[in-house]
Image (cartoon, helix red, strand yellow):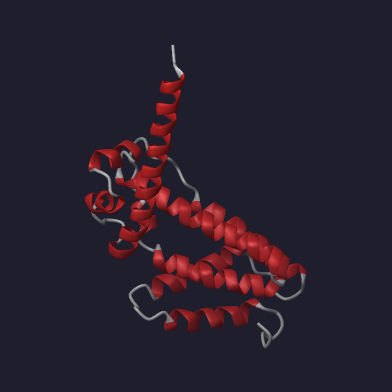
Length: 196
């Protein structure tokens, strides 16, 4: 029979476990950004202030941790798209989100291939579909307003921006990526972009 004290202790343990998981994901964000997807898991545990055993209780393998980090990043990217859809003009929203997506693609270019490793017990994550849905919503809105070219698809845009990210991945300076994005944006819009 569970007493009130036992119930309170269980709640504390669950809260501690949730906090440890949040710390691990936050530390993994930092370490993967600095050192790439092959970064030391021990360093992630150290920065989170937990032991390696705690890390492996929450994330049985590297792919599970990478998936958690990428899920957070993709969720933030998609939430940003939704916010832009409700607060900005159609073409400004699309432009701002494509800039954000380019930064995302440059920062996470090594994580996609690391997630291709098939390890048991790892949750699946369809990042591409989530991002494609976000891009499609913004592009469709811009097309309905008559600012974006009607024949363009969200998949076209993602391929173009991903291509820019891959071709400029080794550049420390983001300027070449921004120049290429400006050329793509000039092709995206059916009308001149003086006000964008």
